[in-house]
Figure 1 (tube, rainbow, N blue to C red):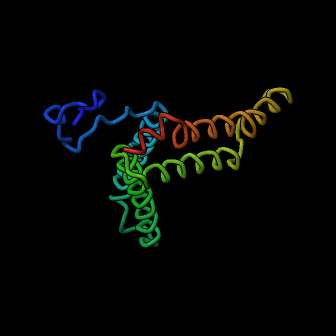
Figure 2: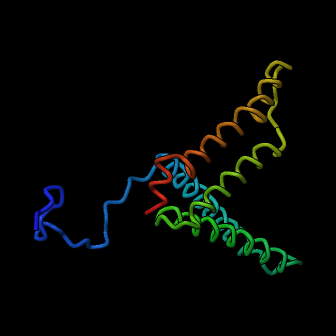
Figure 3: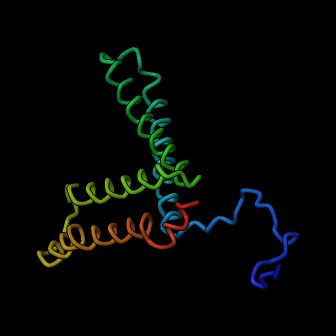
Length: 159
């Protein structure tokens, strides 16, 4: 029986340990992780400050349930941010889709948020509107593509 020269001998086959080399995390994922971590930190600090501000006056507040509901809602948002952070960091498939949802929410918030900036003239106002409705959504769509659908992202999420 003739040996095929293109197949290595049996002894050179190495058993896979199951831990193949993972592709590096894309910059778009790092940026979203940093943004979510900063947002979560700011939200946590705000919750703690709010609780410490109201703690001495809790008996004087007529509607304590509304405050409890507000703090609970903020804690739920913080929990969702932590879940998204963990999903992206650990390469979970649902982390990819929650990250894309977070970017979509960021885009929608940027578009529909009221502009309270005081402009000196109409040229500055039109520039601000151009950035709010054209530039920022395009940049966020580009970010979402780089995060979820680019070649680097597909390799990252495939692991």
